[in-house]
Each structure stands twice: as C-alpha cells, then as structure tokens.
Length: 103
Image 1 (spheres, rainbow, N blue to C red):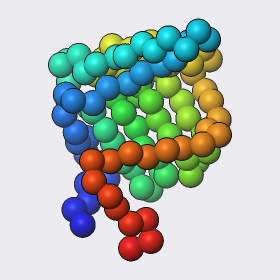
Image 2 (cartoon, rainbow, N blue to C red):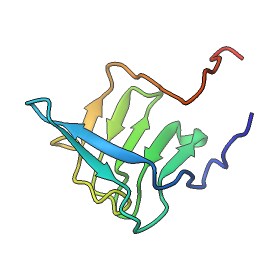
Image 3 (tube, rainbow, N blue to C red):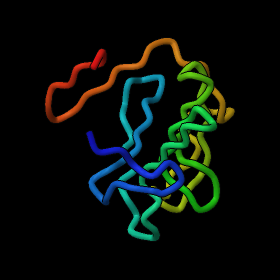
Image 4 (tube, helix red, strand yellow):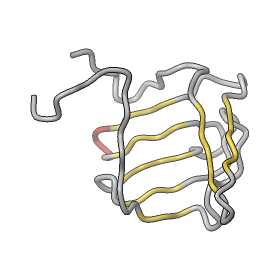
C-alpha cells in the first residue's frame, strides 16, 4: 500500500469542498489554482486537512470526532459552517475502488 508523507500536501485540482445550507442547497468550492495545498494527513496530530494558505478549508481531528473550517486560498471558500467549529456525528468514506479496513 502506498502511503503519503505525513507533512506533505498531496492531491490535485480535482478536489473540492462543499457546504449545504438550511434549504439543502449545495455550494461547491472548486480548486482555485492559487496553490497546491489540496490534502494533508498529519498522523502525529491525528488530523486530516484540506486546503491551506490562510486557514485550512476543512480539518478533521480528534479521531474524527471534531472538525474546523476557515477561509483558504486553495478553494477560495468561506468557513463552511457559521462559527467554524463542529462535531462529527457520522463519517462516510468513498473511494474509486473497494478496500478492506481490516487488512
């Protein structure tokens, strides 16, 4: 299995962030092209982040129980939730091919 360097951004301009409002309308924030800070996995800090230059656009931390969001140049997004902090009730992960979580 290929692993990523834990302190190096990876990914490409196909990534994006999104937010849903109270009317279930979806706002998509595509890669701006301003930098290449698409995804970051920091195992030592127990977090995964997307975006950079300013704040992280989205960061999942504390064993995926909490998250934060702020403006980042990577996606030119505003904070995705009003106060910038949230608790994670459930997390779904999708990928282009099957994987075994127990291997």
